Amino acid sequence: MSDFNNPQVAALPRHLKQFIVNQHYGHYTPIDHAVWRYVMRQNYSYLKDVAYYPYIPGLQKAGLTIEKIPNLQEMNDALGKIGWGAVTVDGFIPPAAFMEYQAYRVLVIAADIRQLNHIEYTPAPDIIHESAGHAPIIADKDYHEYLSYFGSIGAKAMFSAQDFELYEAIRALSILKEMPDADPNEIKKAEDLLAHRQENMGEPSEMALLSRLHWWTVEYGLIGTLKNPKIYGAGLLSSIGESVTCMQPDVKKIPYTIDAVKYAYDITKPQPQLFVTPTFQNLIDVLETFANTMSFRVGGLYGLKKAVESKNTCTAVYSSGLQVSGTFSDFEKFKDNQPSYIKTTGLTILSFNNKLLKGHGKDYHKDGFGSPVGKLKGAATALEDMTADELSLLGVEAGKQSVLNFESGITVIGTVKHVLAIDGKNLLITFTDCTVQGENREILFDPSWGVYDMAVGEIITSVFCGAADKDAYEEIVYKSNTNTHHVQYDARTRELHQLYQQVRDRRHTGGDFGFLGNVWLRLQKNHHDDWLCALEILEILDHEEVEKKLATEIRTFLENKAKKEPELKKLINDGLYLIKHPVEQKLVV
Image (tube, rainbow, N blue to C red; front, side):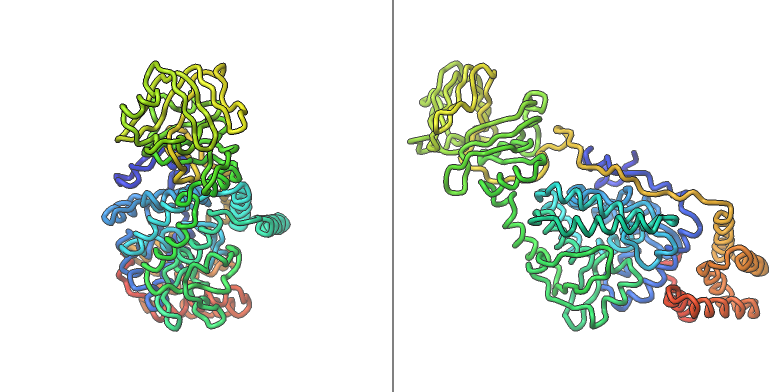
């Protein structure tokens, strides 16, 4: 799969590349390009006054134009100049993976585009939301530093089984709502399931709470003052409906603080309140406040408890730097928020600095791993910091028998086979003929079980979700079995595509106006429900000041349609407004 000659995309690890799909640019229809153009023209017209300033020049810096759906290669060429990249994916991906992409400074862009009947807003991620919403603000250094830092924090957040269930419900509903022939009863079932799962999440996980901060900043954030805020959130920037309504007084504006974590959100509805940050630095400050409560910074018993509860692959980091990655099943409590013993079940790997230790992969530790944590009785120096001479005094020397008594009451007795030290830290002591007993003399490891690898470290400094070396663990991040829907077009729809393309060709290449009358006649005969193609014809005629009789006929049709169909009133009227007040042409080429 191409890395688009973009260093950020090229640097992605294997476990993230599994989500990447081809954009299939040729699959976009003339209607898709018209939808993109309509939304971008409306956004440009309105957002130039209410968006945070860098948005408009940021469109060009992200490789975007008004006229056509962006090509991923063009976006990568542009984003590469500011140290970012972009990939296309199939709809929603798991939150942990999404966060990690951000940490690698790669934008995740849904390859699909919303249907015409959802032109104002779609709950499904689409190329309008991801590229026209996220990409332009990336040009702002303070903001993209925040986005990348958020990703690095989010990638370590603990998540729960309920988080996955909620993700599946959101993904399924968003796919259904973008299906033109979706059964209303199926949509109702999906909505009910989502509501049920939202109401039965239990105590929110770290990922769930972080997702709230992400939503109220990256997706729906405002910046400035409460009286004069500007939009920077991608969800607002890409919604021609909510970008307007969000500025109205009935949408409450609240100063952005750590209290935003208390506000849940519903992706299927307009937001009743929004949060205003004075600066992007404030976003980082709030994120830091939350990060200080997370397992990867707290470690100890708190982190291990979260790891056991998650029932997912997690990593515990010893103070020596040794990283134990696996599914944590149990731990023994000692004192001062620290464990005396940790235990995993199933496939486990040992790493240092996020790289697998040779010989300690999941094949070797296929049945789990267990090891003491803590200080040795009577030792002035931590075991991880002892020199070879100091270890020798304890009998910790290859070929010698050693007895290690921990303050917790755990005892390790065996013949030392090897001591692994890196960068002046003792990480691992390997024993043969080894017995490990708990404080109540219970057997934690028996000599008949084979070689014993004892992790070294006085405390557990960090616990985070996922494996330390994900590629070595070959960790398959949870991937949905629900695929997005791809429309099969009938003959009538294919004819409509041709009409849109003819109008598009005329706008780009010029030439005779006469055939636009024929396009209009075919629209009236076979596609009377269409409004956007008619609007594009009127735009050309009005701009060129030709075929005035035809222009009047089309305008009358659109005005009547707006009166008879309330759901189209704003869309048509906004389109007519832009014909009379066209947007600047900077981004049209």
